[in-house]
Length: 156
Image 1 (cartoon, rainbow, N blue to C red):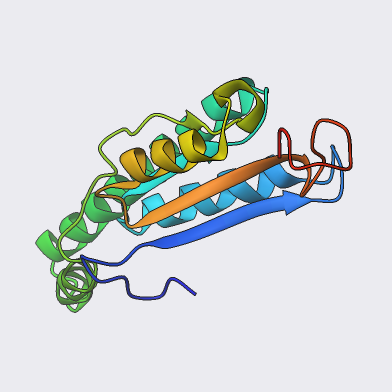
Image 2: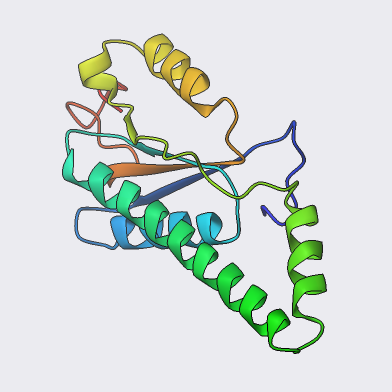
């Protein structure tokens, strides 16, 4: 799993399902928000022709970052009012994450094998956009291996 990610390592998660409507976007956006809230740099990806899901991915990351900032403000306020232990806990948590406090508003990148023309282009695009991210979350389209015709790798 992605418990403690070193600066040079990445965690790549693929969210897929057996068909449309099984909750892939719900799971993917939940993971993105949770990792962003914990201070990880999250790079979202979407496979397939659905461009709306990418907007949901970006909104989830922003919400996670916003929750993280609010939590830090609460911790600072509690420390100012005399409650002990919270700031040390927060600083320890930030150190565990390598001091990362923002996913730098990364845009969702589409990895559609059909539109990109080749597996080589999909891999190249993934590698280029994954640089600097702690967690890459790829949301699949429809089923795990639908392909153009259900038999070949075209479009999968």
